Length: 96
Image 1 (cartoon, rainbow, N blue to C red):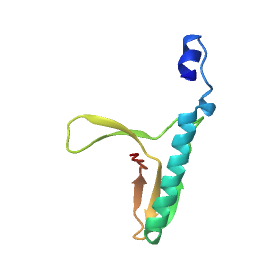
Image 2: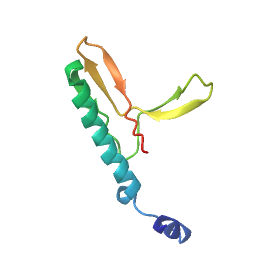
Image 3: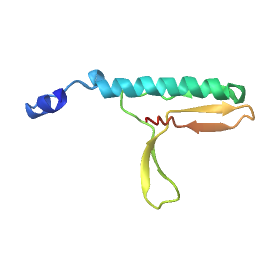
Image 4: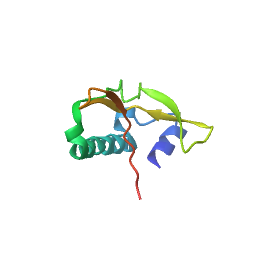
């Protein structure tokens, strides 16, 4: 609501102070922690992607469920597995 009022007045909440952005970053960190906890035996190296001013720089498009429509997604990191292969990591948070 505050964001809508400020936008109507020609002002906006600074990007860093955006609550939903902070919640997203916290959930992403929890996702990384959970990934490491579950798959730590298969990970040699794990790299989280860095963002410039909170903006994703590692975007790509993919098909979901065999559909022809492409969906935008973000690569959150990458890791090297125990076989020496690099794999991309995309953290998806499902809320109920």
